[in-house]
Length: 114
Image (tube, rainbow, N blue to C red):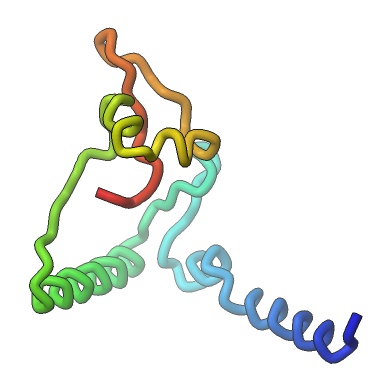
């Protein structure tokens, strides 16, 4: 309703377009997204892999320096784990379908949490 707010909003949207990671990734040859492999799945190119590694190294060093431990966990687990943790009930709508692995029901983790 307020013309000033509308103008400011439009300016923010234009600025956001300039920083769209999909456009920048392609333009700078950092990564590509191959729709044939699946929407949103990133294939890191050499320059992008270098940037990613440096960011990850910085993140790890900062966390270790501050006394945190680094852990790695599987990307897939028995569905019961996600039910016990509460993730399944909270995120079920946004999660991929479950899969049967050797007569057990498994689920891809819902987010980047341990």
